[in-house]
Image (cartoon, rainbow, N blue to C red):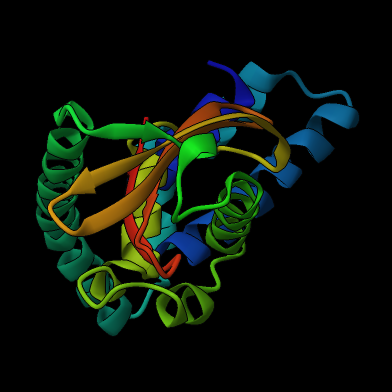
Length: 215
């Protein structure tokens, strides 16, 4: 078992929020690497530390009852939130299947460069976990979803550890027209240290954040 795999196995059994988990993972990984630099073999280090569950239990003993309750509540949210996101995705998929779509360059409502710039800004705000800024420029139904629990859940659907963002990829976008409503829907693949993430982001006519799906 590699050091990162071991650390991630420990983190999955921790009863605390994402921020605390990242801190413990960072601390644990640094400890393992320090011991390796001192000449210890990884197998020996893991053997001394114990099984992932046992080590996690040790950390959990130092986590307050209140935080463990929040963790239990968040586990419920992680079941509910994907369902909500799935509903959003189904609605968006319906928009994509509608016959009336317009190339963004031919749109009379949206500017291609502006949409791309706003997409990058949204992704940067998500990575920075600046939920206040995200909510400020989102439609009302999106605001409740723009929080740490949702972000953590989205990240976990792809990988426990995305790493730092490296670069933005090409953007593909269309204008979707439903009745009198106009939406800009764009897809962009973003490369992180440990994973590539494709974002599908939706904006209304006022360029307010109206939908998200990641894969």
